[in-house]
Every structure is written in C-alpha cells, then in structure tokens.
Image (cartoon, rainbow, N blue to C red):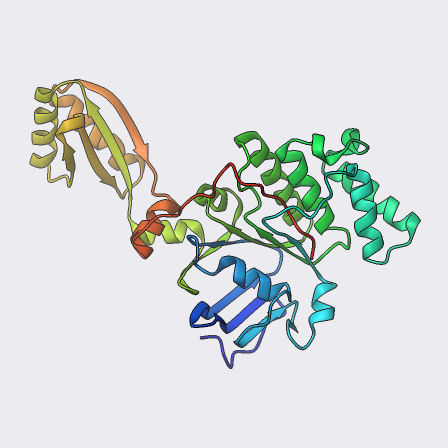
Length: 333
C-alpha cells in the first residue's frame, strides 16, 4: 500500500488503494501504482483485469468507489477540472469524425478546447506535420488507413500539449506496419517529455515501448518493474537445439547430461532445451559439447524470456489479444 507515503513531484500518476465496484463486481480491488514523470509506463493485463477502468478513473471519466488517484499531484475527484487540463486520452474507440477531413477534425477539437479559430488551425497544422499527416490533411478520414486514423487520434489527444497521455489499447486491430507507425509516434511523445501510460494486451508492445511495466490482474498490481527485471524473476533464456535424427538427439542428451547440464528433451521434435544463465560463454559451451558428441544439428535458436512468460507464470493464463475485426480508435479527454 502507498497510503501515508508523501507524493513525490517525480510521480506523474499515483494510485493508492484504488477500488471501483460495479454492483458486486470489483473492477479495481486496491490498485496501488506509481508512474514516474517522463516515461512510457505499461499497464498489462488480460481482459477484465481492470486496465480500462483504471484509465477512466485517472482521466476523471468515472469516480472511484474508494481510494485515491492523483495526476500531476492533483486529486482526480476534487480537482477534476485541473486534471483534465493536463491530460490527453486516446481510448479504444474512435473520437474522430470519419465524415470530416483530418484537418477539420483537429480544428474542431481545438475549438472545443476553447482555442481561437486561428489558434486551432495553427495547432492542427503543427500536429498534422508532427504525425506525418500533412499530405492527407484535407482527405476524409474515412479514406485513411488504420495507422493513419490512429495517428490522427493521437494528434487529437495532444491539442492542449498534455503533461500526461493515457493510451488505452492504442494499436488494437492494426497491422504490423501501422503498429510500428504508432510506436514511433509514442516514442517521439515520450522523448519530448510527455508521460505516457499505456494499457495493452500485446506484450511485445510493452516490451518495445515501456521502460517500466505493471502486471495487473483482478483489479490489483501483482508485479511491477522494468521488463528485464520481471523476465529475470520468471526464468532464464533458453537455448533450443534441434537435432537431425533420433540417434543425434540421444547422443546430444548423453553428452550434456554427462557434463551436468540441466536440460529438457522433446523427442517428438528432436529438440533439446537448455537454460542459459551465464551469457554467451554458457551458450557456446553447450553448443560445443553437442557438436563434439557427433550429433547432427539442424537448428540452434536462443529463446529469450518474454513478457508472455511473465504473464503465464504470474497469472496462470496468457492474454487474449483483441479481435482484429473490431472497430478501434481513439478518444480525446
């Protein structure tokens, strides 16, 4: 619990014992969280873990049942209006109007934020250039690709240059190229000093973007730290050696066991799996022993411990990636 601990100016987001109930169901059940200023922070969890509910509470869109949430040192309940001036939100569903061009969408958002007509147009042009959408600025959004539409969503969430940006499943349903485009845009935001709280079910996304992550399940954090720290807690990288025939598998297994090497054998695939704990020297020693045994090797691969492994170990189940057929997009806070 974080209760009673003084909130640091270095914390952009703080949750203390946060609870949100919907009837008898606790979507958040004592969520404790600290997000340092200026980082990309990943909030990971399966469907129903409480990720979106946490974002909605932090963005002042829903009230907590109990506990406390602070953004930029401001209470999301008692200082909701001040919080809204400091945040942006790109949610799971599109806030942009597909019947309008991209530029018109951004100008509209600017005017909703009470910018002058000239100020809204100027800000729209800045964001269109920043997100590489200038050439498509006067096209209807309905003609945009998924990646372009998502970048426009991000642009809309940045009309007021927020200190903290909440991204809720920002690349759900996008193809790999579009995902990479969004990743690049998010990195640029963080490099410019924006704190980004990212919720995702794509664990490789958190691995690529986040400097710190929290694993949330059943409404509370069950693990927190840098991605590499969490991976080390779960287990070592593994060297996978595939042999060409059963005799080679037997020879390789005997050679490694004689040297006291811990291994797992998969005869159906002719494969050996060996934990690698001492870096390259350990890896090369294992390969050399198998080679010296006379075994015919058809493939050697190093399998890195992933955040998927962290999930499986900590929660007992993996994540369920969102459907690629669903409509996804963003919303501005």
